[in-house]
Figure 1 (cartoon, helix red, strand yellow):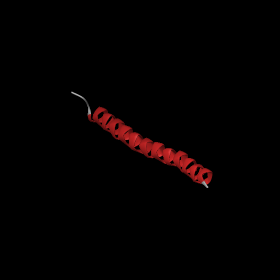
Figure 2: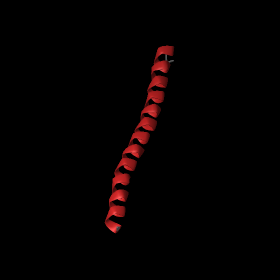
Figure 3: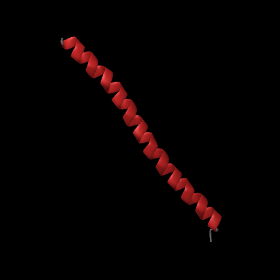
Figure 4: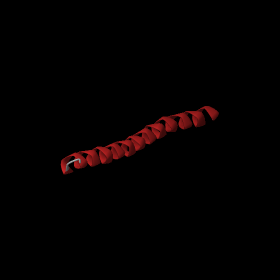
Amino acid sequence: MASIKDVGKFFVFIVGGLVAIIVGSFMIRGTMHMWDKPDKENDEKNKD
């Protein structure tokens, strides 16, 4: 049977992985918005 320390390490590993995925998704979403904004501004300027 696994000891409490082993279960704790596994739990921390799972929680840390979920946090990393969530933070990474927000960072990717932020960079996508940063890339989209200049393109939209350039398109508006070219139309005028």
